Structure formats: structure tokens, C-alpha cells
Image (cartoon, rainbow, N blue to C red):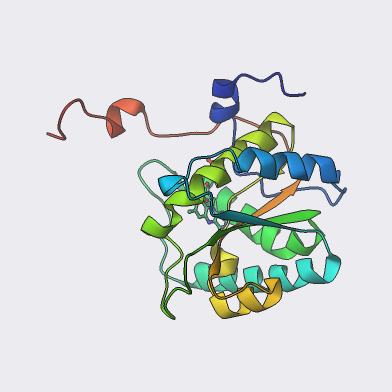
Length: 210
Ligand SMILES: Cc1cc2nc3c(=O)[nH]c(=O)nc-3n(C[C@H](O)[C@H](O)[C@H](O)COP(=O)(O)O)c2cc1C
């Protein structure tokens, strides 16, 4: 598999791949992923996405520990056991994969952290989501698509980034750089497959909602 997959084939087959082999990913491929991410748009063309590729073992262990704590909180918290578009079996398989990832994250060869550089330090209670994320998430998606096209597994994760102070300390981030997404990247243990999404008729209207 190479760059030959068409863009629609990549989009429709870009599942969150959480079970990854420990085999290293060549640096040039990791640079290629971040370069692809860097082609995404940003508000006012600020080009303020910043990317940290973590392959150092002790750094991966520290991030994996933060993720493990985040996953524990998520599992214990109030979460729906099923949703209209996600039957209980599928949901259980997703949770099993999240738990697998939590146990093995330190073995995954590269943890890519998508960050945003801001004009000034954000407030103490800054929430790394919603509006603020508009200039970094398109890059995250570019990276996921590029990984899929290259036969690499990847998944967007945020559970390990909840403790902002700890994340900043591990990554030595200055006050005005925030981490938004942690993307473990490696060669997949399982098979790639199509994504399952609600049908377009359900989520689309013409001209107005009703
Ligand atoms: C904003 C956002 C945050 C996410 N956070 C996590 C996470 O912390 N851990 C995780 O395993 N997956 C995380 N995911 C991945 C989603 O669970 C995944 O994209 C969704 O279940 C669809 O999976 P599929 O593409 O394989 O169908 C996140 C996805 C998004 C878009």
C-alpha cells in the first residue's frame, strides 16, 4: 500500500486504530505526517499549529501514565452504554480498544501531540476545545488521513491531556502553547476497515433544519 489510495477511499476507511505494533516508524514518515498536517487551514491563516513527536521511551511512559489516569476517569464516569448509531457490542469493542491502548501506549513507537501557539498565555481555566481548536483539528484530520494513506494506524485522543499542568510539564510547553490532541502512531496490529457512520439523510438538510 502506498500513496495510491484515492482521497475518498482514505476518508471512508480511516478508523481510529488503537492497537498498534511496537515496531518503530521511520522518522521520515513521521515528518511526512506532520508536514501533511501543516497543510491544513487555520483561522486568519495564523499557521499556529505546533507539533511534538514523542518517541523517547521515558517521555512516552510519562504521557502513557497521564492517559491511563484519564481513561480510568472516563471508564468510571457517567457514559452511555449504547447510542442509537452504536450498538452495545460495538461500544464494548471500542472500550476494549481504549483499555488496550491505555495499557500499551508507552510501547507505541510515536506519540504525536498537536498543539496550538497562542498570542498570549490562556487563562488558568482554559478549555482546550471548541472554538480554540478550530485551527488545530483540521491538521489533526490531515495527519490521520495521511497516516491511513501510508498504511499507518493512528487515532485522535484527548483523555490523556485533561491535566493541563502535568502535560505542560512533561512536554516543557511555554505558557502560550496548549496541547489539544495526542495521536499514537504505529503499524496496525489488526486490519484496516471502513468507518460506520449515520446515513447522510439523517444528518443533512437542505436550506433549513425543519
Ligand atoms: C475530539 C475527539 C476526542 C477523542 N478522544 C479520544 C480518546 O481520548 N481516546 C480514544 O481512544 N479515542 C478518542 N477519540 C476517537 C473516537 O473515539 C473515534 O474517532 C470514534 O469512536 C470513531 O471511531 P472510528 O473512526 O473508528 O469509527 C476521540 C475523537 C475525537 C474526534
